[in-house]
Amino acid sequence: MKFDYTSIGFYTFDCLGRPVESIPEGGNTSFIEEFTLAVSGAAGSAAILAAKHGLKVQAVGGVGEDDMGDWVLQKLAYYNVDIENMQRCKDFSTSSSIVTTRPDGARPALHKLGATAGFYIKDDQVDRILDTEILHVGGVGLMDKMDQGRTREIMQAAKDKGCITTLDVFAATSEDLKLIKPLLPFTDYFMPSEEEAMALTQLTDFDEISNKLLSLGTQCAILTLGDSGAMYSDSKGEKFSVPAYEVDVVCTCGCGDCFNGGFATGLHLGKSPEECVRLAQASSAQNAMGLGSQAVVTDLTSTLNFMNNTNTKA
Image (tube, rainbow, N blue to C red; front, side):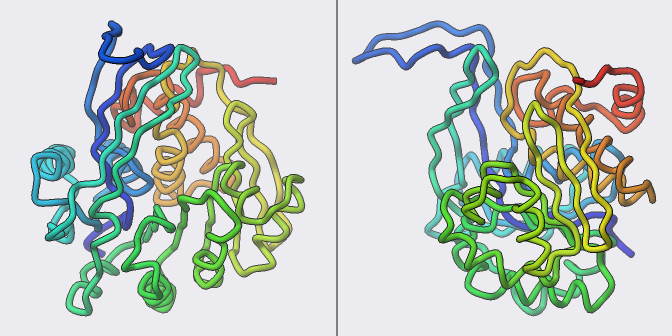
């Protein structure tokens, strides 16, 4: 196979600053300690993290014909992520965010919807996109053109070819479930956050949520639970929880997305489900220790050392 990991979906240009306790009134100015730029998004953060871990990664999504798009493509290429199937979407700007990171790591953001809504995978791109061990889709709910049935076609083709498929979502209400349901029968691992999972299912009990998602067709549901860790349930009856690592949180932007890339690394290495989740948690925890997605993650050796030598919460 040409690629270990293909990441389709939401790529965004992020501008982040911290600590931001409040937005100044009127035309006033507040001073902050840190400022950075990052490629983020449910596909973007996962792609770069997996590349830092040494996987051969392909990015599939859209950016605008603007400076932000130039920077996103340059940054992906810097980490040796293949960008042949990153599209320049005419009449769309690059999806971009201003992230105002709070002292506790929370990251309220101002987001400009953009080219994530405009890209579309054409038939002549499919063979190259599916020449991969793992196919990840991140950002369902923002991919307006792809969400109209094309994502299901791509995931079905991926499963027919024998790819491992993983899925993440950008969800706020139960209305987004209609976009997710057609994809779940072609999903090996569905990895929503607890907020997304509750919004999709309109349930609050995590066992009930997992059972609901499994009943809709996914082979495995992994709920990311913030500082409570993660919960794994699969169609074979295996179920376990993994605690979060004890870290000093700087910024939580991109933590779930880095979880996706870390989990894919575990799959690629042939690790057990629990080891995959632990590696995903270690990737997410390192991300939280710096400003901007994947900020502290350097390589696989460092992530494994972190995983094996960092205390977890009780």
